[in-house]
Length: 165
View 1 (cartoon, rainbow, N blue to C red):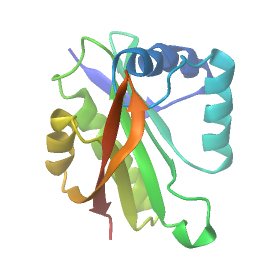
View 2: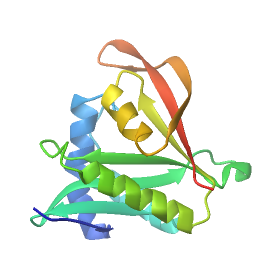
View 3: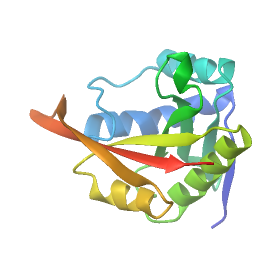
View 4: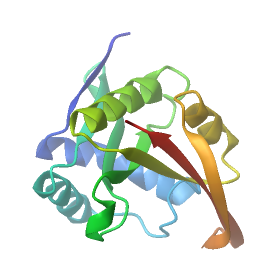
């Protein structure tokens, strides 16, 4: 089964939405509590486009099975060469190489934009995501203890960083 990675279009946002909302409702990958609306996600996409930040989607059999994006790590101007990224794969599609294809595409795009470093903020209990990022050269740079709260428990955030240049 072939997987295609391409830049997302506004019409793809409706297919990204269930991936995001599944992560919100069932995981600690996103620290939001409430599902997002299509309007929320269309605004998110518009902001990415306005700031020249990419959103890529993975398609298998005409179904959006994952997405990846990055954006500002911090709004202060001195951080303009540093981005925070996200990679999400739809439920039932993990372990098929989709995340790998998305992350490789995202890293290459960041290099083409002459960015300096990419940051991942990962729930510290998410050992699979941490190991996944380490395979691509991301290194652990610190843990913020109990900065998140979801599902009636405190959550630590593992910072991971990839130097692009």
